Length: 103
Image 1 (cartoon, rainbow, N blue to C red):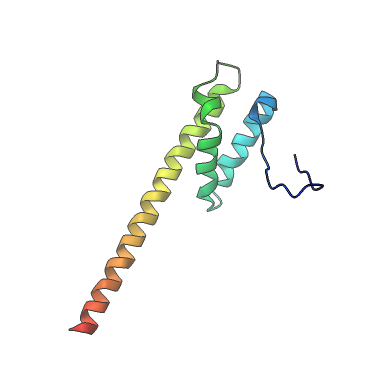
Image 2: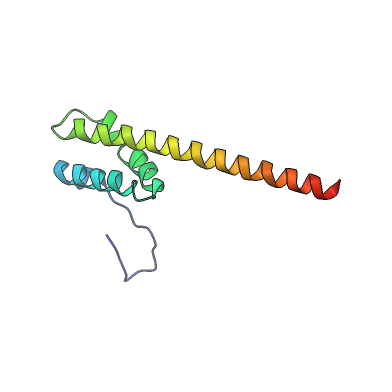
């Protein structure tokens, strides 16, 4: 995985080489990690495991992975909405303060 002999920064993980049980455990860890105010993990989980959840032929752990991926997508959408609303509110508040100073 890591090749410190070369100056290559290419670090990849091929999910095709990972056991299905390990995929489920990794997906679960990313999902739970998102609750620790790390919503970026939900986004990564959604992108990384999307194919495993929806495009691969069915296997035993796929139903649980699909649940984690869907919940991660929902969590990502909620966090994007919260951050967007907060940023809009702060920008609008600063615009009003600048307008008051100018006038």
